[in-house]
Amino acid sequence: MTMDATLDAVPEIAPQHPDNAARNKLVIALLLVSTFVVFLNETIMSVAIPHLMVDLGVTASAAQWLTTAFLLTMAIVIPITGFMLQRINTRPIYMAAMAIFSVGTLICALAPGIELLIVGRVVQAVGTAIMMPLLMTTVMSLVPPEGRGKTMGNISIVMSVAPAIGPTIGGFILSQFDWRFMFYFTLPIAVGALVLGAIKIRNVSTPRYAPLDVLSVILSALAFGGLVYGLSSLGEGAEHGSAIPSWAPIVVGVVAMAIFVWRQIGLARNDKALLDLRTLQHTNYSVSLVTAAIAMVALLGTSILIPIYTQSVLGLNTLQTGMMLLPGGLIMGVLGPVVGRLYDKVGPRPLLVPGVVAVTAVMWALTTVSQHTAIWQVIAGHIVLSIGLAFTFTPLFTTAMSSVPPRFYSHASAILSSVQQVAGAAGIALFVAVMSLRSAAEAAAGEAPLDALAAGIRAGFLCGAIVSVGMVISAWFVRKGNGDAPGGHGGH
Image 1: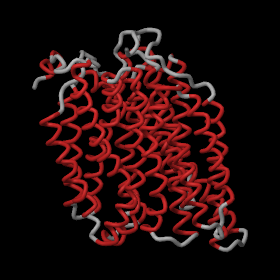
Image 2 (image 1 turned 90 degrees about the horizontal axis):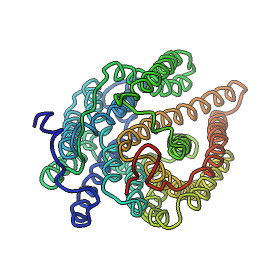
Image 3 (image 1 turned 60 degrees about the horizontal axis):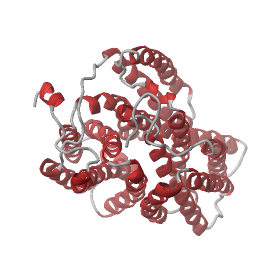
Image 4 (image 1 turned 135 degrees about the vertical axis):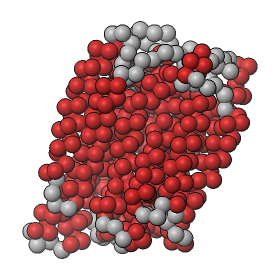
């Protein structure tokens, strides 16, 4: 199909038309399953780094590139999805995303060494980066405002259950099989989703011409890529005693971001922006975006520290840690649709405020952990944290996307996903850097290694607890998106 044909294509089903409700549900279900698969892949690798270091004979810093390269590629590709979702129809962009992801998974499964494995992870990340904005934009186009909370609740299942069961599945596979079976496990599911999508998925968008500003793409790559790489390196550098080199990419990222924002504001006057920042003029979207960013800092920062704490301080293995984190993740997934239905009835604030308070309370409680803390207390804390996050993300995503006009949906989802990537990298970097610096200081003062590490972990959680207070404050200013906003028609 040529680009002109793609642009002229009329959606095969009319968005939100009652007669097409069954087909709309099928399209969303396929996107949910596919997004679940790519998110599962993102977290299943989290417990594999030590095994890969031994099997491939590489250092920790080399193995860490499997994660860093993935996050870096996501940060570079996601901002471009706003453009792609305007130019290309639903079916071809879905097919491209899943095909790219499947090819990347096959490369990883067959990789003889670390170099090709990193290449495979980069290819996987390209497909992954497209899926979440595609899912968000499609949901906003197909689901009427009164039902969006329930559907966004289903999306939160993808966001919570996949990260929860990923380490558990990874730990089980690694305890029984070679590391390549992690990719052999994912590959048939990805190919199955691709084949099913080829048969069942339908076009549900109306593509329109959108110019591509090459300079904006370059600036976006330097800005988002520099920030994510710099923040990731900051945590790693602190862990190894030297955080100074990581400031260079952060500075490049900040400068490039400033130029990128300036250029987007100029291009938006003629509707030529790669990311239309006029989306941020909708106050409710911006407040929801900030609150979601803080929540991501807390979520990913906690997700990196808790396994370090349980394995290095409490002495659990990877499979035990995965099993310990599983109940919270599953509860969060079960609550997703429930919270979504409640959102449709009562709006965001009655759900969001208790949710962020619960998250913040657990963060403060985690500042007291030590080598003598009972495992059941950690499990209970993680369950309460997961419940709080379930009451946080669904209202935030629904409100954010419902607060902008339909013509900004693709930009809003791309900005939301981009900010999540940067915030997640910042959370990991912040928690790990603070933990490492405090642990080193305690060790230098003569503390025993376990005591020093526990003190560092407490300091990391304290940093997260302080940041979480900002989430409690901003949550009070979030109101329900009514599907209408200045500058465009609402999503009715």
